[in-house]
Image 1 (cartoon, rainbow, N blue to C red):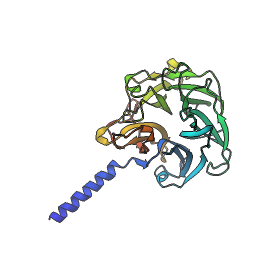
Image 2: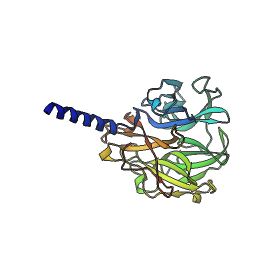
Image 3: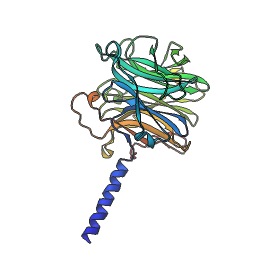
Image 4: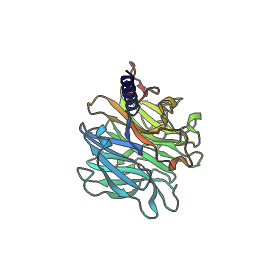
Length: 328
């Protein structure tokens, strides 16, 4: 009898642990980005803990990315531009070529962070050669990172995070139309600055934009505050018929939409990407988070931000619901 009870308890515990871990996709990968090239073709890249290289992997499914072979497609320089803090790469296919936008500093000035671009004209970005195209001109020279690309009504847009000219905060979000994958129509439009209480904890930050277009709206998620347990996600929305280059076209949620949940051991979730699942219907969100709160030293040096995945939810009125209290 006791043996049977023990077996049942172990089984229940195992099921519970599996359920808690269901959303864990790739360990030690922050700032996850996934690109759906086809219903059975997904490319993944992210920040590595060493901040010294850009990796790329491919799978026919989202879950398959966890065990997919990783290829290093670029390494940092020894000195000068692109020689330190290789952060948040994103891969996009634009006009038949592949582009990776990423942030990098200098070995001599690690936080002289700017956005740089790589290009690959091969049909498969895991093949061919990646060409360095240099820095992206955003209109003024200051700390900038986290560039993301999207297309709406045939127009290409870029959204990124950048410090203001007065250096009154770490970063705000900006948007511009694109003339090409490497040239913006300037000047850029300001979308959101870190002004809310939850956006200025530790650092004054709006960063990590990601765009989803659905139900007549453009949903733009972003992340804010320091990269510890206070890191959280906010949301901007605009009508699909609005002028996206007008700040007033965008509505900012007053409170975070996805944030630390102690009971789920989800600490500091953020820097997400959106992607469509293999079924062509289900919207998914990849994001990073830690499974513990206390960090020794600088949070950026703690490499235990893991890539997780969860479905998105929609209300009967078509509103996006991040289901803050639901597990992955």
